[in-house]
Amino acid sequence: MVEARLSSPQQVSLQGRLGALAFTFSTTWPDVLSAGLEKGELVVRTTRDQLLPLMTFLRDDPQCRFEQMMDLCGVDYPSRAERFDVVYNLLSVTLNQRIRVIITTDEVAPVASVSGLWPCACWWERECYDLFGVQFSGNPDMRRILTDDGFEGYPLRKDFPLTGYEEVRYDVESRQVVKEPVSLAQDFRNFDFVSPWEGMLTLPGDEKAHEVRQHIRRSRG
Image (cartoon, rainbow, N blue to C red; front, side, top):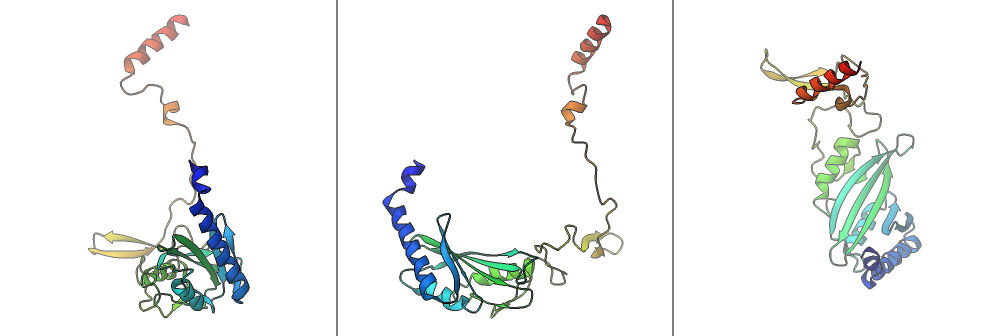
């Protein structure tokens, strides 16, 4: 059934359309760094300066018609000068096709907001800012969305400590929520990886059978 579905005329037509779009971007858009099918999906890599014109084209052109933004996320590569990938996943309900657009940026250079094209992008961009520290110019509400306003650092960066910097708890004496520096009583833990079934000689409810086995062992000894 899977092979039949993948080789259907509709699937062939979709792959043909996506291949034609990849060829168009590669040959007519000078700031498109690469465009092609990766595992059956159309992936386009472009520059920050070209992002808004390209996204407007993808939404409005009759051959594209990507009406919906399904996701915007970040990826961190600390060893690169422009350490962040900003990834946009778009869907065309009309033409039943998808595209992934990728740009790169660093900790300082802002990325143009696409919230004017897809209003839902305002939330996605705030999340990317909150977790990675990527700045989006033109976003109407560039605030943190998952962490507190006074939170320090960006949790999804590769150099962010796994334990964080602060812990939040309720203090009974002061009757308020307080923040304190993280203090670990034990940095490393040792695990013996012994199954509880292996370490337990007698299972609950099996005491009588255990006594019988012990009696047999003593009689044989």
